[in-house]
Length: 56
Image (cartoon, rainbow, N blue to C red; front, side, top):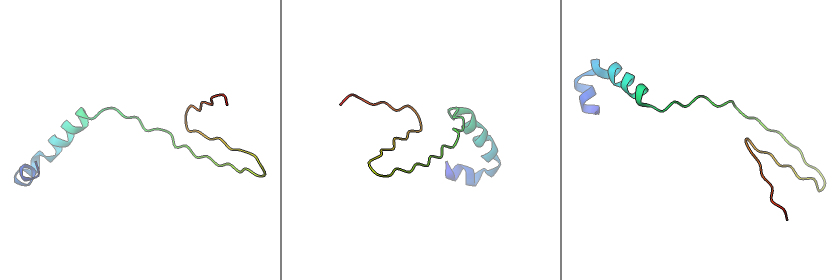
Protein backbone atom coordinates (compact mmCIF):
# COMPACT_ATOMS: atom_id res chain seq x y z
CA UNK A 1 0.00 0.00 0.00
CA UNK A 2 2.82 2.35 0.90
CA UNK A 3 4.61 1.68 -2.40
CA UNK A 4 1.39 2.29 -4.28
CA UNK A 5 0.89 5.67 -2.61
CA UNK A 6 4.53 6.62 -3.20
CA UNK A 7 4.09 5.80 -6.88
CA UNK A 8 0.67 7.49 -7.06
CA UNK A 9 0.40 10.20 -4.39
CA UNK A 10 -2.62 11.66 -6.16
CA UNK A 11 -4.62 8.66 -4.90
CA UNK A 12 -4.09 9.54 -1.22
CA UNK A 13 -7.33 11.52 -0.95
CA UNK A 14 -9.32 8.71 -2.58
CA UNK A 15 -7.87 6.16 -0.19
CA UNK A 16 -8.65 8.41 2.80
CA UNK A 17 -12.25 8.81 1.60
CA UNK A 18 -12.61 5.04 1.24
CA UNK A 19 -11.17 4.38 4.72
CA UNK A 20 -13.48 7.00 6.24
CA UNK A 21 -16.44 5.37 4.52
CA UNK A 22 -15.53 1.90 5.77
CA UNK A 23 -14.65 2.96 9.32
CA UNK A 24 -17.29 2.13 11.93
CA UNK A 25 -19.21 5.09 13.28
CA UNK A 26 -17.80 5.90 16.70
CA UNK A 27 -19.28 9.06 18.18
CA UNK A 28 -17.06 10.92 20.59
CA UNK A 29 -17.80 9.97 24.16
CA UNK A 30 -18.08 12.81 26.64
CA UNK A 31 -15.10 13.19 28.94
CA UNK A 32 -15.64 11.94 32.46
CA UNK A 33 -13.78 13.54 35.33
CA UNK A 34 -14.23 12.22 38.84
CA UNK A 35 -12.87 13.48 42.14
CA UNK A 36 -13.42 11.92 45.53
CA UNK A 37 -12.03 12.22 49.02
CA UNK A 38 -12.50 9.66 51.76
CA UNK A 39 -11.45 9.95 55.37
CA UNK A 40 -11.62 7.74 58.40
CA UNK A 41 -13.26 4.45 57.47
CA UNK A 42 -15.25 5.89 54.58
CA UNK A 43 -15.34 4.20 51.20
CA UNK A 44 -15.55 5.80 47.81
CA UNK A 45 -17.13 4.03 44.85
CA UNK A 46 -16.85 5.68 41.44
CA UNK A 47 -17.86 4.47 38.03
CA UNK A 48 -17.96 5.99 34.59
CA UNK A 49 -20.97 3.82 33.72
CA UNK A 50 -23.02 1.23 35.55
CA UNK A 51 -21.94 0.03 38.94
CA UNK A 52 -23.33 -3.11 40.57
CA UNK A 53 -22.87 -4.40 44.10
CA UNK A 54 -23.55 -7.95 45.22
CA UNK A 55 -24.62 -8.93 48.71
CA UNK A 56 -21.95 -9.95 51.16
